Image (cartoon, rainbow over all chains, first blue to last red; front, top):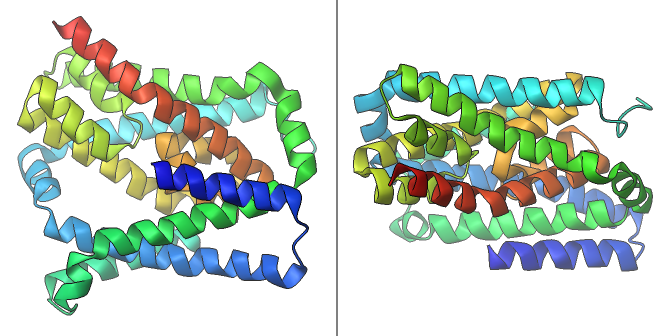
Length: 93
Length: 201
């Protein structure tokens, strides 16, 4: 977590202090996709080496699915309601 | 596109490891490589968000209302999982602890297992891991009709792993809101689980 906070702080500070050229911004934007692929591929590798997920799904698949769906639906509904009702943040859309 | 790419990359990782197509060196250092990629992504998002100065003014103008998203997401996730867990035969505090992790699977698996046992810890791990995976796939389509809905689904992960997809699927404003929401949830999750474990005793 400490490294992530450091990376974020450095990024935000750089963005606030230096006006980067368009090509650098484009590079950063493209690098997001590449690093996303790397991160998720390694996540897949880690999960396949970790028996926890399979154990939970084989023993409690239904409970996991019901809890996951209910929590996700409620969170999505909350965000949607906030955006529709109270938040002026996106109002100019 | 980003959602499909996320699912494809994850599946590729699982298959590559299962079929033993990766050298041992990469298999052993997958954790480190993934973390380095995550650090780079968070840095890049930081630069993109930092360079949009008007976004900061707009978000700060929103004031306390900005807190409604993370606090509501955390409370509703805990409450819903508590009630649904009760229907599934779990004590209400156990379900609430599973839901209140808001996608932070590494913490929830260990913390819940410590208080309520390994079996419930596995369920907490699976629910929260799959929530993160679901968020990776659903952020792009969700963000088209509601950006806050996409950020709410991410829960605690909006401040780290899902932040780059939020940034790609929304705009710098969305990334900043995701960062604030995910950061606050991340700070509150351990406290909520501790409170629920105290209520159990």
